[in-house]
Image (cartoon, rainbow, N blue to C red; front, side, top):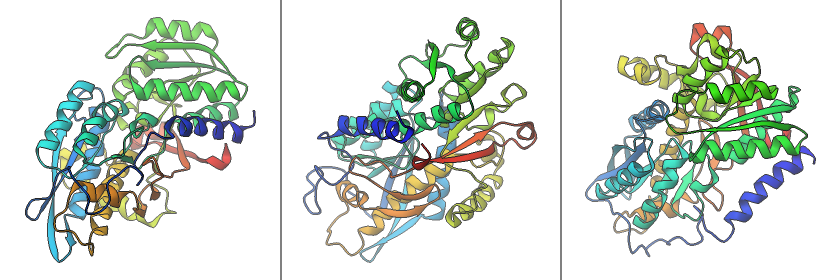
Length: 416
């Protein structure tokens, strides 16, 4: 199968699965003036929920996403709608990287009267809370939740990131382009992000001539991977693809080295966190959404300069950002997710509204388009951002000194 044909097949599979199920697009949503539910702005304060994990296995990445949202709120703290200046207040909850806790956290945001939500880092918790947001008729804007199910059958979930069918294909093609034909895949049982991305990688790798020689899984909170790695080593794998949380990455990378495995180690966007940078991690390759050194986007350049100043203004922010002022892609996405909601609020200016309802914001989001930090952003009929570029990065010896990842290349749909 040709590479382009494979990608189209993968995306078509997702599209067919979603067809007729609705999404973030206008069809199936309310129209202006017809809202019968949702939350309504009271007074001159607009509450936006921040639905993120700040504890649990995804707490590190979730906190970086929160930092991006907080910075965006600092840049855009008010909005003028129909002659009134509204203050925008962030209402933050910790979904604890846990599906059950995610539902409770989402319910608390609804009770607090938020009219829109940013989050979450981690597809599993986003999927778990999706029904809560939809039933309450409050739109959510995902930042880095890449699993296709996040927006599936949900008119109230949008996102600003690319999806895992694309990301999995990118990493499979990168491995093949580097000459690797035998791959091992290690994924986490029950985690939608890990199992989903692993599945897309396997499909693309095999369809383009590669062989999966080991397909291993582990349980949540597992810390000893030696049995799995023994099997991987004996399989003869030339490359290992391990989409996992940051917490798992910091455990499994040293164990890969300790087992004498020399195969190329690769992962997805979650590994772009300075916490994994170590001598054992030199050579690791990952895909992500953004590169702080890319100067082709003036919006991104301004963001990077301002965000670094924001981080360095408070030592606690540096601590939350894994101990450095490196700009994580999820922080950039958190910023873009907030700005998408801000753009929707601005679009309400000049409309004939007696009050501002969460359904009005949902409908406005469907038509939002702007130049974001992570590229041009608009939404398709499913509420997914129209994105076609991934950044490939690696960890080098220089990374050990700078606590930053090194850019390798960009990969677009046209390249696959």
